[in-house]
Length: 160
Image: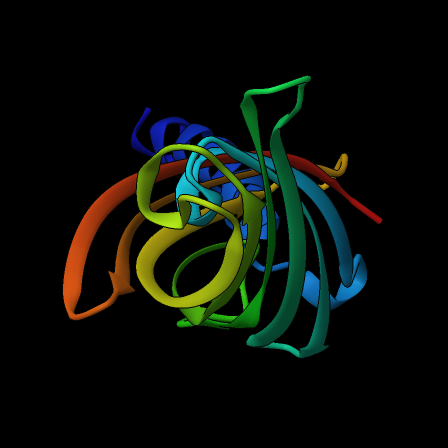
């Protein structure tokens, strides 16, 4: 009877550990959409793994648009590295980088138009399934003009 329980336990746990043993380098590219996050409301991003635990990401976002007489259009361009703590498909990570903003606005910190750059840093957790689904959760520290803002980010995407 004891052997049956050990066999059942091994049969249940072995597939789970084999999923975690796969590498992000099997599917080194990902395309994602992030809600909230480093670009305020959303961003579309592409990441390429350059080493088993290092990825480089570039992203963009556009909010608003110009109207006759009033309005605002804000364009975000972001980029930076992501460092993973393990080589597995489920891993905590830390990321940092810069966001360039170009805007024409009649309100807010970019009133009258212009551009600026702010920095970001974030710890987080990523899960990549073998089927290609990706999930990331992050807590960003947005650093702009001597101030630090805390902002969450939830990312969904595909790996290939």
